[in-house]
Length: 160
Image (cartoon, rainbow, N blue to C red):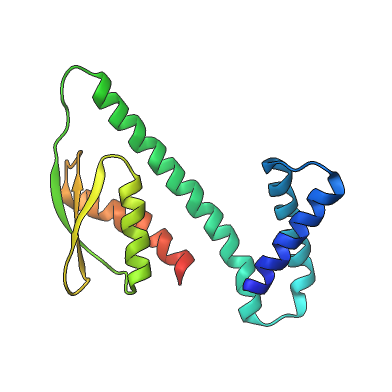
């Protein structure tokens, strides 16, 4: 998978060199173009190398999901700051983790910390429970369900 990624980056840089314009949009276009060229040439490679072509779209979808979630949380917190009344209902949830490795738990907690209005307070010793503080905790079960079917599920899809 690393081999395909590095080859994709090389094709992106070749595209930038051929066009003569080094900017973000041109580089991303070259990356997407290189991805499709590699995908077309990947008919006779083994499954481990084809995994790259399934994982990259999942990573892009995860990034879009996370940016949407972060934008939504920013709007909620901004609205709370601007309005004269406080509508927050803070609380701490004991969140059961399906994550197994330290890297997965670290990525999950970092994503939560980057989202305004939520913060991981503690991880249990057995690494099976995360204690998450939320500013807008209306229903604990809905919060856990939203995290399970949203952030954690999408993160596990790209990490495993």
